[in-house]
Amino acid sequence: MILGVSLVLVLLVSLSFASALTASIGNSRRIVRIDPGETVTGKVLVRNVNDVAVTITATVSGDLAEDLKLREDTLELQPGQEDNLHYTVKVEEEGTTETKINVGFKSEDAGGVGLAATLMVIAREGEGGSDDPDEPIDEPEEPVDGGEGTGEGVEGGDGVTRLNPGSGSNEGSSGTLLLVVLAVLLVAVLFLLFLFYLAGNGKRRAKSQKSSTKRDA
Image (cartoon, rainbow, N blue to C red; front, side, top):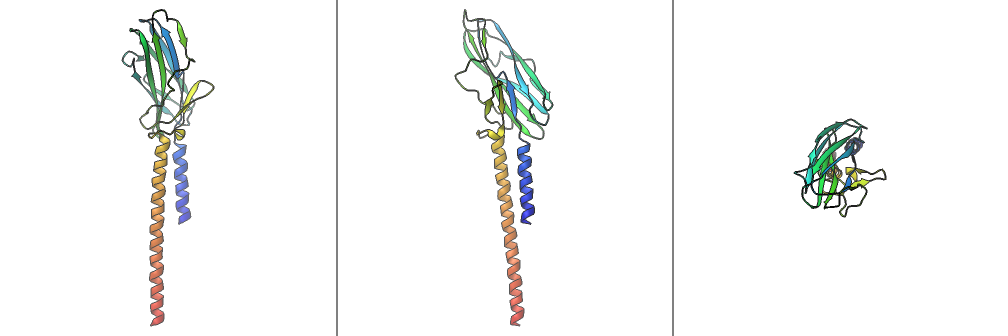
């Protein structure tokens, strides 16, 4: 009985971790220097590095959220497939702005995760013509809620930022949610085992008392 319950628990753990999604985006940081009134165009690479099909959703937040237009706000990617989210924004006013394109990865079987691509625009007279996607930004990129949870993004040497929810430390991460679910399952299994132990103990005591009564008779 205990062996059977243990095997079921191991199977649940394996399925839970196997179902975790990994998010991967490229061109995740970009700094553009322009003259006020100019238009910035660009794209964010999205890759499905998972073994299941995913739905990509894109939203915009930050200083230019109302001005930045996405050509695509939804994509369907098969395993191993990649595509681009194209955007256009016209910057009318002078100043420095920071805008995020929030990219969510979601699958029916594996939940969802998300990452954000950061666009920093420095609009000043005489600044036009400079576009340095590799220039560091003061604040590091932060993962965003993809509807089902997030984790920590890690930028590799290929310039692609990846997110594995199992590595995240955020409260809303898919990895944390999985751990909570598994902890609840473990407690439930232990409680059932305890109940079985008590029931078995009770039967043994009843049998022992019955045998003792027969001997006394």
